[in-house]
Length: 421
Ligand SMILES: [Fe+2]
Image (cartoon, rainbow, N blue to C red; front, side):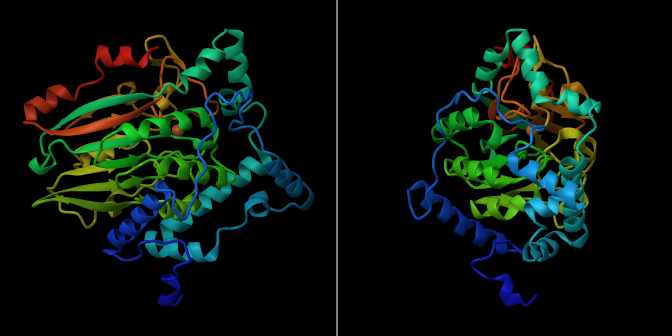
C-alpha cells in the first residue's frame, strides 16, 4: 500500500511510526474536548438507570440479526460470521499488520473469527458446563427463586470509588502522588445502569491518567456497534489522557473506533511518561486469557531494563511472567471479584487460573505490586452479590523497600468489609 494511503485523514488513525503516537494523542484529545463542549460530534447520554429491562440480553442470548446469521449459515453452509458482520476490512488489516506485526494481527483476527463462527454457527452443546454456568436464564431464575434478584440488580449500579495508596520502592520522586484512574470490565452494552452512574461520577474525580483494562463488550462475539456507542458516552466524561488494553470479550475491530475517541490502545506496546528529568513506562499487552496473543517481550523490547514500569493486562493471570519481567506494578481486571459472591466477598468462581488472593484488590508477588479491579460493569447479567462494582483511584507513592513490602499485602479486613453490602 502506498504511504499516502496510510495518511488518509478519513481512515481510522493509527500510530504506524514510532513517535507518531503523541501527535495523534493530542489531536484526539482535541476531538474529545470538542465532544465534551458540545462541538461537532454529539453523543447522546445514557438513559436513566434501572431501565426496568427485566430480561437483559446475556452472552447466550442471540439478537435477531445473529439468529438470522445462523439461519443463513444453516441454509448455505457458509461461515455465519462472514455473513453477519463481514470479513475485516482489508485496509484495517493492512494497518493492523503494520502496527502489530503480521503474526499478531493474523492470530488475533483468526482466533476471533473462529470463536465467532463457533458461537454463531454451532454454538455450545446443550450440556456444555459453560452454557449452564453462564446462562442468564439460569442465573436470573436462581436469583429470583432465592429472592435476591432485585437486590442484585441494584447492587450492579452501586459503584464504589476506591482510593488506593500504592507504595512503590522504585517510583521516581517526580511521580510521587501521580494518580491513575482505573476503569475495568465495563461491558457497556449490558451494563446500562452502571454506565449511567459512571458518567455521573466521572466529572467529580481528580486524576492524572485514566487506564481502561479491557472487556468493553458484553458478549465475547457479535456486533460491536453498541459497545462503541457506549464507550463514546463514557469517554466523553474522561478528561485525562486515556490508555487501554483489550480484554477477552473484545474484538480487535474495536481498536480504530476506540482510538478515534481518544483512547491510546496498547497492544503489546509501551509509552513513556515524563515529569522533569524522571520517567516511567506504561506497557500494555493484548489479552492473555482467551486469545493468548500477549507478548511482553515485544512490548518491552525498546525499554531500558532498570526503569520503573507499569503493566496493563486485562487478566492478572499473567502475574508470574510480569513479576519476572521486573514490572513494578501490574494493573488488571477480568475476575469481577467473582461478581456473585458468598457473604464475606468470597467468590464462587473467578473464571481465572490464579491464587484466590490475587482475585481482587491489592496484592504482591515477589517484588511486584498488583491490583485486580472487580470491575465497574457486569458480565452475563447486570447483577452483583457481595461484590459491588468499583472504579479505582491509584495514588502512587514513593516508599522505601520495607514500607512497600508491608503495605502491599493482601486485602485487609477493612477492604473486605467495603466489598460487602
Ligand atoms: Fe469482564
